[in-house]
Length: 484
Image (cartoon, rainbow, N blue to C red; front, side, top):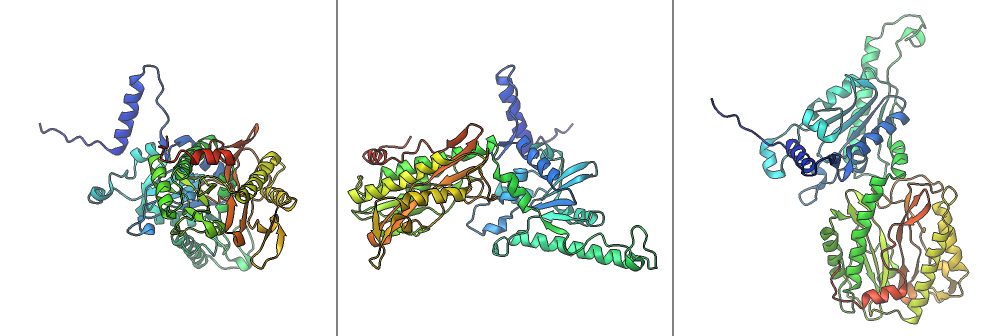
């Protein structure tokens, strides 16, 4: 009898690994499978909460495509799809049916396996039971069935809920195409219903004025589900905060690496190279935004990221960086003196910025403080300071004149994360980042840290990253020492 070929699929490989791990320690329970370092139950809970909030119709969310990133870009799943599924398979779609369809409420559509392509991209799970177990989703079907499923739902459901990009989000073409597809299906359902409708004079159930059967769709019944998902994303779970902490730790290591190499004559891009190398060494997949290494006059430019200038002897260097770890973003800023010690003027401005940040920290109260309140607090610290500075025209101002941005923003899967303007509450994660930018003196200082609200109050997630001026100077004295 001819021997059967045994193929070790990706799912079987993961399953065998878990079995081996469990049997190595008798009595130990196998850990829950994870996607992007978060347990499957976390994604399931998010989908269930969303279906509870969306009372009408079905939810349709599309994932990213390899083609979105061109030849040189590394694939990254879009945040809405990733938040709900954890599935990083390109060209995937998710449909949630609160009322149920074919005995299930969750449907994932992914491309069938392409063995020839997998020689280039690596093994991929295809539709079916293995993918259902690996992803923790009830039904995983071929992507080729996605449109047919939508057409069937258009005939019975009254509403499609999907992510509708804002008009300015012109780069999100795949999501815009999905919105158009849903609207076209809605229009086709209207036309089909109208063509099949009997005519008459009755106005009984199921008929419109003049006896025409009411259409299952109207023009406004492709609705934006993004606000509902945003509300869920604003409050972070413990697994999410754990990912944010990983991103912050990697960013702290990069800040230490920069501090230990900064000196006059170094180019800003050399510091950026240290940042990116440290991110990768600490397990981060990418930077959460383009790194800002601004020295001298560029320390006063908020989103400067050209990073090509040679660092001068008397320069302050603003280092605003963030690692992304398993889709969660850090955002940490430190300001360093190129010589390793602050001049008296640099020190008094730095101390004022740090005082504003600490006043904000002390003021945070769960359920009462808004991010806008923190901006007002920082501005008041600057306004009442005895320090003064001049604008380029020679006019003298109180220091609040040189504070030109908000103090805080939400933090999560986006570095400027989604979130409503409300008082902070447990599960919220945000930044506190006061800054002063005196272009006439080529002197900019920004200090930024990341925080979470817990049941017991404010928790500084970046507390291990030095920010006191004596700590910064002490760190810079260790130039050449390795970062652990």
